[in-house]
Length: 230
Image (cartoon, rainbow, N blue to C red):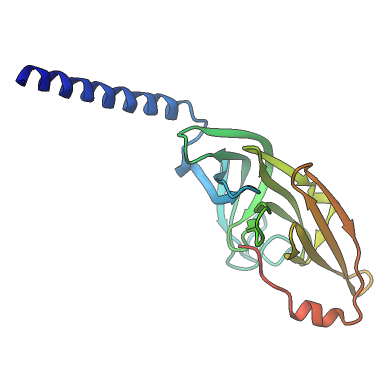
């Protein structure tokens, strides 16, 4: 009986050791570790499956924005206000299905990207409807109070871009107005008025359609704008 017990214990220890070795070996193949990520978000796909998204960089520099500076961290320009926490570097997006230990490197790379951690320029718009994926935005300033952003979501386990940044400028970050429907608003200083863009995302095809609604009372729309990003 004792002999059989020793065999069982030895077998269990061998299996545990093999599992630990396999997990360690798989983790060793990862392009980054989670602690290297400057920004980490959880992103759900249209089926509700959650993924970790890592935004990790190299050649990274850190600074506090100030009007006393004359370099990339100067405050009171289109990028930063006094006291904002800033990073600049070459960043890549990575994805991780928490059910596995493997982190995947995406094809999306951002050279010389200025990350404003205070303003959360890498942000998400979580879904509010069943069958709607969460959106990840990598934003950048294009003028005073005007941003553009690359829009991403998870599709069949792959990070997918659905909107190119320079095709959509906005002052108000997107709010959700229906299933897979978003609304942005731009304060156009050239014309001194607000314009709106309505976007409908097709998650199955990774496409978007746009129209340009006009409101009788745009001020009321702006006053009731919802903060759906985080």
